Length: 236
Ligand code: SAH
Image 1: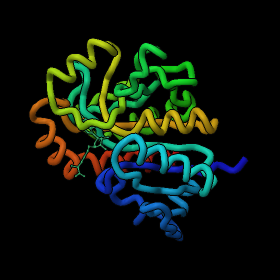
Image 2 (image 1 turned 90 degrees about the vertical axis):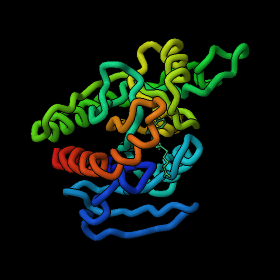
Image 3 (image 1 turned 135 degrees about the vertical axis):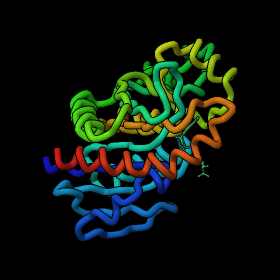
Image 4 (image 1 turned 90 degrees about the horizontal axis):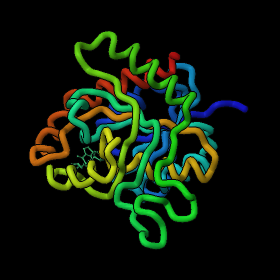
């Protein structure tokens, strides 16, 4: 089967430069999103901004698979840290993802996605390993950022509150980062049988200064990181 890679980000900054780097880009607008197909460093790709939140991300991932025929999905973006060892500027690659605001208890255990039997949805190991190798090649030229691999939590909340974060960390001690889309893409890919991976650069500490840190970071560092890592991944 021919590989066709879907690349999703929530925000324009997280995909800065990718469309410009595409050979023969073709645009299609569908459901308030612009899907751009073309060759990125010799890989057949479709890049799209999902907009923000779980529903937005799920709709985008499903459309990529059903309408654009992608065979693999990569999500690249920023996230808040949920662990003391994960610093702003570090990179987290998801081994699994949890919808941290999913709670259908007592009918299903807290966090479990009803009828899937799963609370933590695993990402594709091979794709994530390739992504980690690409991130390492990119980080080689950078000073300091650390690559982490583990659990990412997604919910329809921008977390900017130390108390809220501590409560979440108490319920999910392995949590490394929080964002708003990854676990929704994970569920869609799980249900459609499409391999996927999620990579996030840490933009803030999900605490009271998150909003300011986030704005600054997204504009300065995140865009450069996303571009560099996707390039390293495609050049493979
Ligand atoms: N100010 C932005 C909104 C950004 S929402 C705007 O106006 O466009 C934050 C985005 O970054 C989401 O897509 C989410 O996935 C990620 N993110 C970064 N830090 C986060 C945090 N602390 N909590 C939740 N999501 C976070």
